[in-house]
Every structure is written in structure tokens, then in C-alpha cells.
Length: 170
Image (cartoon, rainbow, N blue to C red):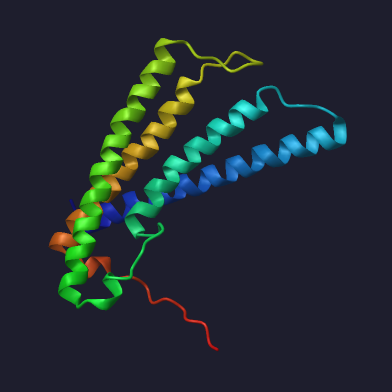
């Protein structure tokens, strides 16, 4: 796999996650405006909103997993040399890869279950499995991005250079 292809793939995943942020915000905004100005409730707005939020969470996991933007505890990492920092990063990423892979496997079971059970929304009786499938795709993207991160951490650590962080001036 070429570096350019992987970087385009990573950027695409991040843009998809960003698009879901916009969709969730638009859904909430329209529901509130219509409810408060016209006393009109969008059918299934709540169900769609919570399923979109679930999709957003899983695509957000994909976006943050590669960049390492998730919450971390760096007490030990900050106090060791570069060799041990890299070892800790590789170990932590392998653990994350395992956990998210298992999560993806179990989420697929949820997609299959909602499809087989014909779970529908309350008002419009829309099937819910497509929402679960899109969330599952985000989780699958997270597995791929974590695998790319692991590969780069092991074989090309120079590609994982973080951008300098801005420090506050006292």
C-alpha cells in the first residue's frame, strides 16, 4: 500500500466522521426549530437522532483512533526515553486493535439481529438495521485505521510524527 493511498483513505474517514457531526447537528436544529416555532414534531426525530448519534460515535472512534486523539494517560510514557515510548505506543495500539476488532465483531451481530428481527422505528416504521450497518462500517473503518497506525508505528515510525502542540504562555 502506498503512503498517498493510505493518507487519502485516512482523510476520507475523517471527512465522513465530520459529515455525521453536521448531520446530527442539523437533525437536532431542525427538530428544535420546528417544535418551538410551528409546534410540529418530525416523525421519528428522536429515533433517527439517537441512531445518528450512534453512527457518529463509531465513525468518531475511527477518526480519533488513527491520530491518537482519544483520551490517554501519559504518566509513564512522558517519563521514559524514545525507545520505550515507541514500545508503549505499539503495545497500546495493539490492545486498541484487539478491543475494537472484538467490538466490530459483536456490533455485526447487532446489525444481523436488528435485520432478522425486523426492528422498526416507532412513527414511520422504518427499518433500523441500515443505521446499525452504517455504524458497523464506521467501526470497521476504525479497525482498518488502527491497523494502518500499528503498521506505521512498527515499520515507519517517522510517519507518525505528531504536529507540535501549542503551549499556553503564563
